[in-house]
View: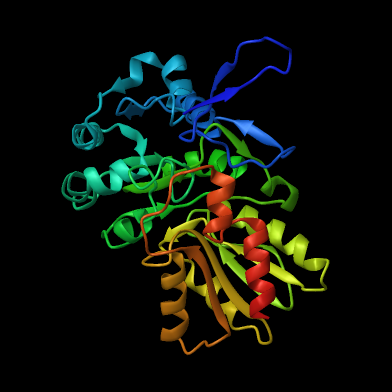
Length: 338
């Protein structure tokens, strides 16, 4: 995307600056970030684990795999713009005893390469890790690149573990954790300069475990991915209005930590809000609601998520406000529901 900026100096020619909706950062102004946490974590892991290999479909720069490729070129495989081939090669690497990390965009893995992941990797229970950038609404490029349905698609796939990290720390800790796990994993990826927030809460990623980041008497937000960061921001905003908000981070979508979710949602007197960077159809919200209903737990329940629609293209802050997943929009919704 190009934009024209005119120099205020008289007679100067307009300057064309390049911006990208594809790799737009979700970090707010002045927010602490770390660059390419996945790429650095995988490269560091490969120093001690010689079975780690990296593959991508012409997207190493945009999935941060270029960090790994630079440090371990003999274990990096560029498959070109062929996601089905990427997943087939990933399956082959896993069969040969390697631990392959395959990267692409979430839309391409979930829509274009679904059958290859299902038949070649998941059904065979192969030890392959699929790590995908641009999950949910993290690009302004419109429906062709916005993976608003990836969790719904992959939650229905047997044997597949699903991880949705919140920030740079979560990604850094989740990367070696999924490498140590024996079986297929799909991990949503925040790439580039990724916000750093969970280090303030003595957080430690554990595969399959939800973590109570902060407690609150009035509202419990159950969230995953970047929406945990937004939930923590919303909690601080709502505190100014004397609304006490707890945040339960659920980095593993499948298998769901049902014991923790049931225990926290069953506490009386507070509304439960599920917040996710995904369609309201088929994601964390429906998974949590179903689990609570099955077990006779019936709090006041609300859902913050993306609409069941093909979303607009545009600037991410505008889109996040429009579709209700910005900090301000979520805070306003919670205040209206109370």
